Length: 337
Image (cartoon, rainbow, N blue to C red):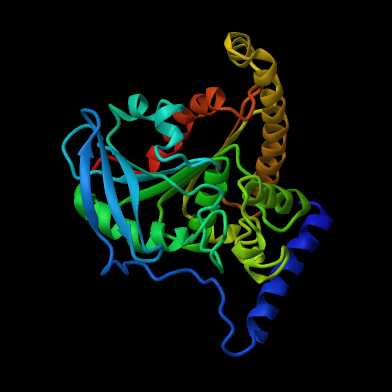
């Protein structure tokens, strides 16, 4: 780690401690929720989509609404571990992991139940300080750690072991949840994500993620650089990941032949080419973020599997390629019992 980065880490940690010490009495801050607060949340209904694919409607007391959660039931006799798989920024009503990422086919023969929440568009999968005019009420950290596991794991007869992973916004969200809740997840995976909220790249990516979908980032954690931005920075919180199986992956931003063929086969090749240009820039940024986070883990002596693809852009054609190697790493946290 460079002296500059090290000084920034130390200074950031000092600011966190100082801010915690001087918070005015009565001021409300976003804090990690207590696990297991599920008394007012539960399964509303379920629908069978495919042989191993079930859509479950779950009530969130924290967000006061019903959320769709897709479940891919694993192979073999249960009980099985649970993998929470987070979507990217659009967080469609059905996870892009299912519609674009080939997750249903990939996990069909894997001994794990995969839980895919949907509807968290631009939310960063975090608890917001205030409701947002465009993105509504977001209490995703509470939902994902304090409500959903206590609902869905008994429903699935889980063995109590769990991991979390995601792509892009979901990668950052997964890593934040893992470092803010040490030991709650045995494994964490991030594909093409950015893991700082404080450095210039991380702050810009976080702000762009929220505001590209119409949200006001100040309603999430307050003005950039303030306390809640610091406590969600996984570089500053990386030491809490010790003992967790970690997988990181990012491509270079160079288009693959599959990317180019997809552009050529598009009904609007020019529009697809322009969109791919954005994917090039986003993936190049994710690569820088991943390299920075991997160095931070190495400096702390925390093992991680890091997979750098020589080519690939920020697109589902390339994300789906990263799924297999990620699961190979995460599955080591769940040996056969």
